[in-house]
Image (tube, rainbow, N blue to C red; front, side):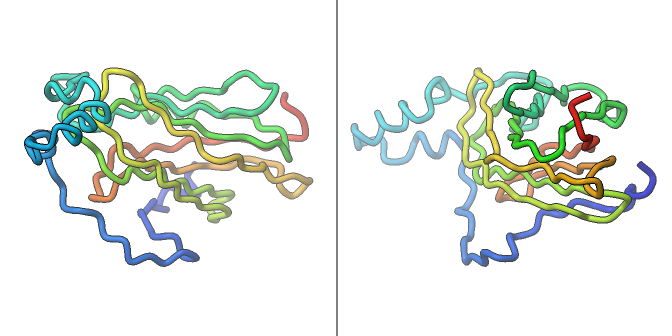
Length: 200
């Protein structure tokens, strides 16, 4: 929507939880595998942890150099069919898809993604929700670190409660960002939902 086109998502630290955490220096998959090779138990642990990646870099899309390939956002509400956004196509078209959410319900968001080529450390999901151009909610979720795998990997947020009441009903625009400790922007997209008294 035009009212919030100029609002940008910026990865920001959680204001209420200051931390001195500094991400470790980035290492390639090969560097990790070649370190401590004389330690048999550590070698086996790495193989277990990295799965098929221990044999060499897993590549899902050879033409795509990105390490994280975000596939889908799924809104999960108890007793309702999953509501999905396909994040593999034209992201501009997502603005045309509007989820309907019943006021006051509890829901989760699941993000499905592939990791290829190298380990990704400190994945984060950042979400900013706007109503009439005003920021009304913000959240940052630490997703974790992931090794490359052929299988889809996913992260599900903790349960959230939709606002309720006459004032809460209406249209909301969401700006989502999938990033990591190194500041890589894996995917940024916009989507929207309407909060209504009922599901239809």
